[in-house]
Amino acid sequence: MTHGAGEPSSRKLVCRLIKPGNFLLDVLEPGFREFMRAIRAKAGRNLSIGSEAAHDSLITGRLFMHILVVEDTKNLALMLRRAFEERGHSVIVVHDGAAGLSYIESCDFDAVILDLMLPKLGGIEVIRRMRAAGNVTPVLALTARDTVHDIIEGLDRGFDDYLTKPFAVGELMARLRTIVRRQMLQKRMVLQVADLVLDPVSYEVARDNKTINLTRTEFQLLEYMMRRPDAVLARAALIERVWGEDSNIEENTLEAFIRTLRAKVDANYDLKLIRTVRGVGYRLSEGSTR
Image 1 (cartoon, rainbow, N blue to C red):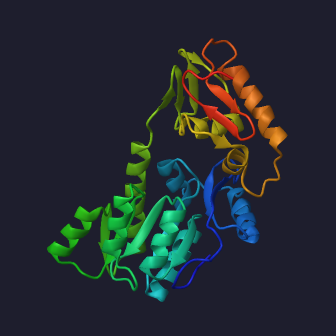
Image 2: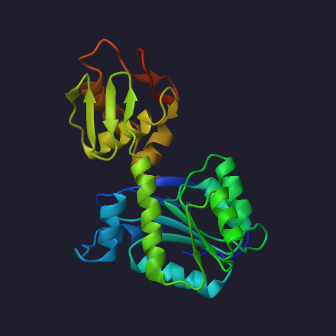
Image 3: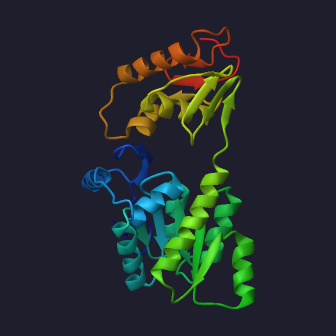
């Protein structure tokens, strides 16, 4: 999926999680039903053990990466899009810095490929605004400028790595895997609310040092809530994040999963963590009562 120069669609950009096979994938923009069906179809294919996509899976912990390419040289942008798609990744391509920043501010990407010399908003300014806003998405810079000063400035501004044009696609892929792997390791932080502990990488959950066995959907629901302790989470938001915006899941299905989570997480403890906020949704909070 490629977008031309300028601002993305005027429709509100929505990041949501869908379940392609046994993995999670971030996808962008409502209305692209055919695109999402194609992604799901791809996820169902078996990857050979020696394939680069399978190698990416072992390194990043997910089968697909969702990548933003911000590059104004259209032939190079097209080449990168094809290279990523051939390796099983989803990619958004834009051709100017302002459009790239709009996507970065609206959606979560696994990595950003960012040219330095861009129309409307330069790459250095894009990364400055990203980091100032607290966005730590890995960014690989592409530059035709190879002076030590330019390289140091870019790295000081927050680029995770850089490549000087022209470059080999294989080297770009290797550098991208490295910065994404580094980010994944940093994100491995175990989540904890009171005595409830969740490891998002090993898929282990325990309370009071006692293991809790959860289904995949229960785990996703609990992880989403634990990443937002004390926040009131609307039912619609929970459904969209766990099942996907186009899943047709009803609120009573969500309520059923909340009941099973409570039975596993709260039933044997005086301290109840999962609380209903009437008319809105749910909150996971230390010391809360229903």
